[in-house]
Image 1 (cartoon, one colour):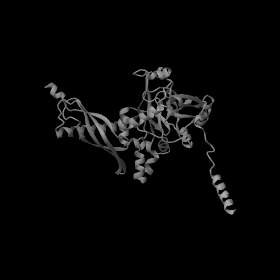
Image 2: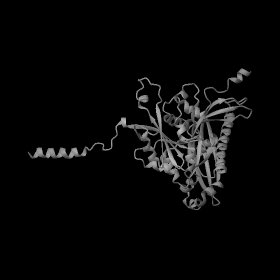
Image 3: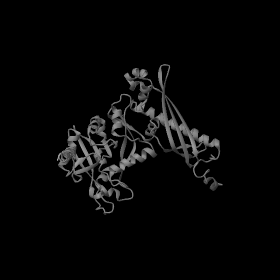
Image 4: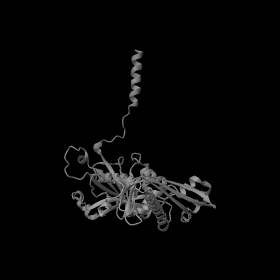
Length: 403
């Protein structure tokens, strides 16, 4: 009898541990949000949520009805989460943030400061931190989320994938997640940059056309990530162009592979694919002043040869190409730094961060007026390109055509 009583008691205690999910929400009650846009609306915040339409993406075997794969809901309120909750006035489902792929700030909003939004999203227990962030250049985030895209039915997924591929193969931008952005915003040693999202083509027409935008070979409007937005603390202050953005990424060691060209001495150009690129940045004190030394190691291969006289089978010619490549990389990095100094006067390259880590004593004095000290900081540039391959053929067959 005692054993039966003990058994019942044990099972009763075990059952008390099986509490279930007290806050569960069924799948058919949530709207899976993949893109979130934040804009300024007077003195309030306008939130745009790009939500997946389940019937259009649920099954690949089931034919599509031709409807968009996503829909966008918008609401305006004094705070971010009030606006998100207010969306339920027009949405039949609760806005669910755990699957966000892209966060987009409208340009007007970014110029007013983004710190409050970053902090709010970091507080959200159900939002992951692996989504990417960008700034809509010249327009609102709401407009960007209304443009249909090719190849990817879900525009937020298209932007996410573009960011992945672009940062690995072309390198005018670098990926930024919300935890990385927060780390920079709280630092006094570096200012933030974010990718710039542009609408190429006729944006108003692309929005009106909806899915018809992608029913032609050449869409009316395409979304392109082209360069970098520059911030001072949490406020947008301007834009870098594509070349200066690539120079920034070389300095920050964000270049994996990319393609560029050098000019041939006798005319023509040679295209080089950087197979691997690594940047090492050091600081040393010379006559009491910090000096930054930037060294780029580049392993490249020749992908295109339009030189008139240069013979790739010549070792000296290959070394000449390497020297030209070194000069080009140094020129791009130097131009990026000088552009930032001239236009923005803020350290986005992390030089202050490097000095603090390497020489805290020197940084203690420099940090008092770092933006001013950054303007006169001495920087030395080095590049070492090594051409590993000449491609599938040695010399251009076009030379034989001209003989």
